[in-house]
Length: 473
Ligand code: UDP
Image 1: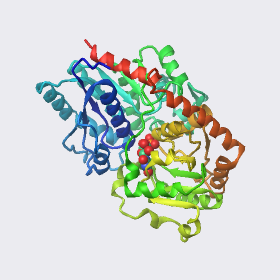
Image 2: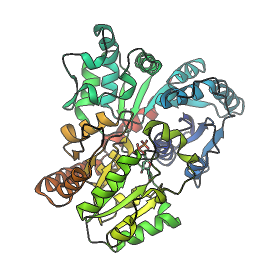
Image 3: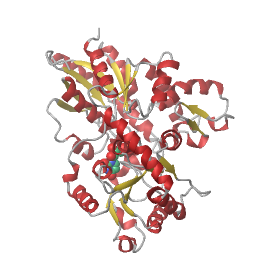
Image 4: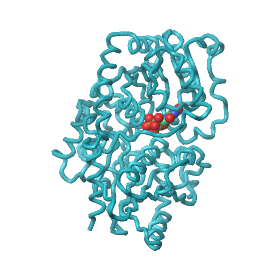
């Protein structure tokens, strides 16, 4: 820390949608304020909604984190079925003039930004930092091994003449991650799509960043960090600065209090937490299979229920507009039959409080990166149930790389059946396999706990980044 110097103002540019990106940005801001004598200007583009969940995340932040809300931009010209990734990145790009205005007014008011830290969806804002002569850093809020994939992709694109799914060899990434075509992120499934073009442009653009911070930790992805440093010339320095997980007092809200109160009455490590991230949804058929599978397993569960929708990726951007009460979608009599051992909550639970609770013994997760990090911090064994985006790759990482999860398998109709769900819950919660996974996650928890000690890997990496910003010429 540089207490003798005036604070440095760091500008952060998170995406407007995707709470899973905004949350780590806010936590990064807090770390920089509390431990590195920085002030923060959080530049928040508009996402076309009332931004209620975003605003509630911003409540109670220290005054040295100053939020600037940018004016709305129009995306009416985009096709109705435009993919979520494209929509978010277009919204951000159209907000760039307002980002420039913000940096200009910071300069004029005598608190110029000393660095601009951008989200992966705002990668082109690297150019804005360059115009202002300040360092441009990417804060990559997802896995490090995905950067290795980004380094590979332009070569794959050149060498592969058909779809990637037709390639003879699977794609191998550091950390024992072997990707079958089925596990590739959706953005790579169709070579001639807009979103594939976006992904390819991204791979070239991120190389222009002055540095990359990743919300991960050295011990979790050691092979990926080594690979990028030693075998990928031209890649900017990559710093592990995680696990940055949400800190706050959400359990004090009504819904939070209800979950925690219920957990307090359950035996240690007896409850399976079931949640599909900040916006993930299931189809009607899948939703019913899950309900039946949980019921059949006979185990205790805490399920965050969201109204079923046919397209999980689209639901992410629309989740605020679903007015229906999600509990209305549950099978007839389900609540009554499971009331002794199950609790369902509508739409949102205080996940950190749940995962850290002594009664929680497992987590059925959609494999979002934040959920994975949070599980490592609290040492919770997992059932991996990937939904969309890059979740299938994360499921491979969890099972084959980390060995911290059992993975569900869809049947020939693309559905995970109730028998399988019930069997996996039992294997995780009561079997020897579950014990092994639990022990593995306990070891990972110890490693995660050390990252932010004084000499911890992430403390040192973040201090190094701040030093680079301060000494930037
Ligand atoms: N989350 C939560 N309660 C919920 C659902 C999600 O607190 O009911 C939080 C969760 O703790 C995590 C984030 O929302 O920090 C979801 O991020 P993740 O990367 O796991 O998934 P995404 O929503 O981005 O797919």
